[in-house]
Image (cartoon, rainbow, N blue to C red; front, top):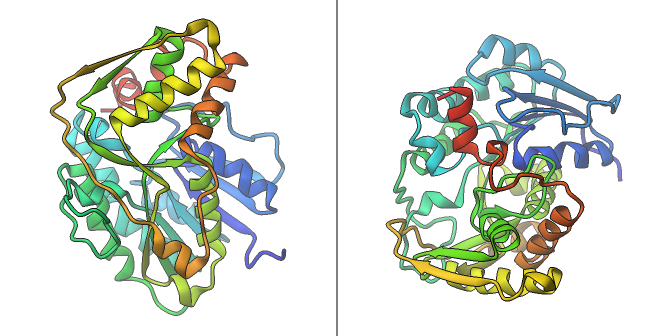
Length: 337
């Protein structure tokens, strides 16, 4: 397939999703620039690929961004202080990165001649919802600043779009599965790590519904949004989720898969304790299938199996103690916060 453009810049390309997306875009034939501050390391990036360029930079540095955007045709914005817990470390750091830096970045991209801007928002903007099906037009009821800022940036992108600057927003579910820069602080990944290395899973609460998405489907969705016809995506918002499951059911699934992959570890116990994290929502992702024909291909079970394979292959050493797998711990250790 011929690509509509060649030069892509991914902010936050050294994060969990970015570490899988950058090599995928290279394989598709793009020239890829990763712009990332490097809090979580960069050694896993495809530095040896001649079509890959790494720029260590902060998205709050508009002058550096302007320079980086020269010659870029598409920007995929993944950079943020990710998830609610990371946000509680230092409100001002998170506010400056996740909110204040956003509009100046959009303006810099547009002024540099970027043609398309793909923004990773979050399905957590919906907060707690009793609705059985949360679609894109559901009111945003964020419970935390992370969710609130994700939602507040969406209209800031739309403010600057026009016929020569296409903006599209996606709200992904909670990610799971293996990637070169692994996170083990997301629900499915936490449960799998504990099942494999602790022989027991602790469930906090259990009734909360959470939408999940395999990190590979996330990357496939991004690539699709980069190339989808402008008239179908301009100023549009798409939920990208796959399986909505309760935390308790996730634990049962993880237990079954890990016991199958590591029979010597069976039986794996499940301990349930109360939780004050009552975020519960059930997202509907029919729109992206209806409008763009996109359907996730990978299940939560696939994600757990991928992680089990990575553990077996020795790719996730010291997974219970190495702070690199945990965003909050890493940011604390780096004193970024």
